[in-house]
Every structure is written in structure tokens, then in C-alpha cells.
Image (cartoon, rainbow, N blue to C red):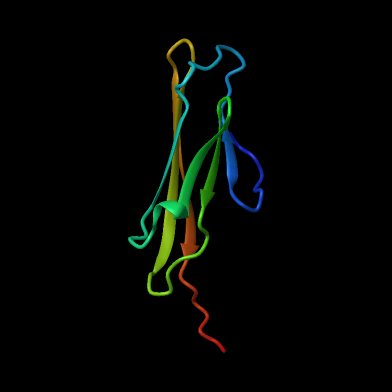
Length: 100
């Protein structure tokens, strides 16, 4: 699994296996947030093509919260049954500067 460079709107997550190939339909990408005020529009996981997903996360948080952490989990199975899985986190910390 690989992550391409940011597009300004999200990340594209891809999976490949040059040796065995991927089991069709086995690539799964999910995303969650620890922010209780998060709404479905804050996290979007969209198919981007064969073995590709576009993941978009809101990169701001409620001023009342301590911060927001989003987690992206992926798993994929190749044609011989090997499974690869990983999770990555993205943190939007609380603004520590209180200057005006």
C-alpha cells in the first residue's frame, strides 16, 4: 500500500502486488474521527478507480475541543491469501497561541 502526495483536498491511497496480484474487491479503506462533533462530511472515503481510494479529512476542529485525531485504516488480500493491513493517524491539535 502506498500514499501519494497531498492534492490539497486529501490523499489518494493505492494498493498493488506485482508478484501475486490483488484479490478483486479485497481492498478496504475506512476512516474515523475522535471528534464527537464530526459529521459524515468531515471524512470521505471514495473509490478512485481500480485498487484506489481518495480519502478526504477535514483539517480543522471545533474551538471547544482539545484537538481532532482522524484514523485511516486499510487492508488488502493478494491472490495467494496474504493479508496486509495498516492504520495511520492525522492530528489537528488545539491552537496553543492565544494572541490578538
